[in-house]
Length: 83
Image (cartoon, rainbow, N blue to C red; front, side):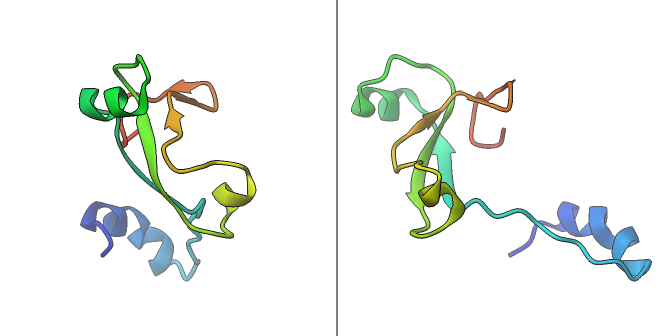
């Protein structure tokens, strides 16, 4: 499924005859909830946890692993899975 807001944002590009490429890093993510943080033994209140890795994908090749916690990316603070 593709979110309708994403479709609306790319329609002008598609109508011009151009193509749209989306990035793929090969992970599934979830909010880092207090319960998950306790289960992982981390003392954090915000972030995202990698819940799934596509084997052989870019994240896997880059060394990311399931249950890694992401708190910052490219200098930007990560507070939840939407970030």
